[in-house]
Length: 119
Image (cartoon, rainbow, N blue to C red; front, side, top):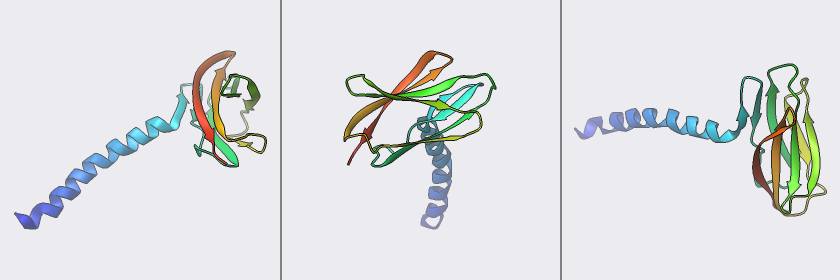
């Protein structure tokens, strides 16, 4: 019986791995619909730059990311362009702290999450 133990462990691990990969993919998404896919900002916490991956899947979708500081003041709005799939934001003017990013689709704010800058 002890000879077969590694086979059982491998079988169990193969069954668990897809579960963990699916859970990670779920947390990597900020938004996923027929019109638009947007990842969460990474790295988080960030030092010099944050990145967000996206795909506009419908032509006339207007999407942007609004960055706010912890007291709610808008730090900037970044438009998601059809011709690109990655958005990078340099954090030169950001001090250490907590910030929020909101996805706006066709004028509606859909979801807000936080990110940290750690210098």
